[in-house]
Image (cartoon, rainbow, N blue to C red):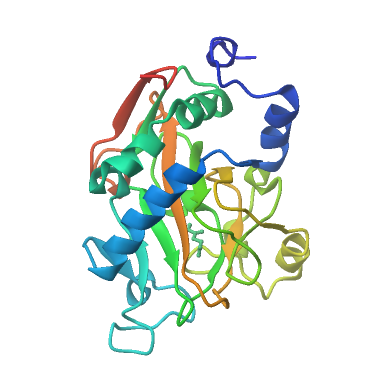
Length: 267
Ligand SMILES: O=C(O)CCC(=O)C(=O)O
C-alpha cells in the first residue's frame, strides 16, 4: 500500500483497490447525502433555467448523430454546465471534500493531487426531449499529460439507469493497448470491426442511485446512451491527476490553472 493510503482516513479496502486496478472503475454508494444532493441539484437546475453561461450545447459536442448547429432539431439543448469549480461554492465543496480527494490520492497512489479545470469540471446534463449518445471512447483521447493516468469522479445527482443513459463501461479496458486502426477519425471505437464488437459485448451498465459516485480511469472505454426518460439527468464530474503528472504546456490540458489540492488531498 502507498504512503497516501496508509495515512489516509478515507482509505479503501484491499478489495476496492484490487477492483479499481482490475476494472478501471469503482462505484462508492451513497457518498453524497440528501442535503448535499438537494443543494447541488437546485443550483444546477437554476443555472439551466437561466441559462447561466458557460454552457455546452448538443450542437457543440460533434458526436456522431448530434445536431450540426444550434438551429437544428435539439441543437440548442444544454449538454454540459461548464466550469463547475468556479461556478458555485457548492460544487467546490464537493470537489474538494476529503471523501473524494483522499480516495483519489489512494487510487492514483499519489501523496499530492490536483484538479483539472480543463477537463470535465462540469455538470453533465441529458435532457429528455433531445440527447445524443456518447460513443465508445477513452477520456484521455483529447487530454495531454505526462502520463495517461487521471481519474474522473462522477456523482449522480439523480438515478442513472439504462433508460436515461447511464454509463456503460468495458471493465479492464484501461489496461488494453488498442491499435490506432481500431479507432475512427474522432477516436471512438469502430463498431464495424469484429474485435471491437467482441470487446463491446463485455461492457457493463453502471446504474447509479442519487449520491452514488463512480471513480473511473481516463483510459477506460465507456459509452452513454440517450435519455429516454421524462426527466433531465444531472451528473457532476471532476477530473484529478497526480500533482507530479503535469499537463503538457501549450495544450488544452494546460489552458486553465490546475487546482493544487495539497498533500494527501486533505487540505
Ligand atoms: O453522454 C454521457 O453522459 C457521457 C459523457 C462522457 O462520457 C464524456 O463526456 O466523456
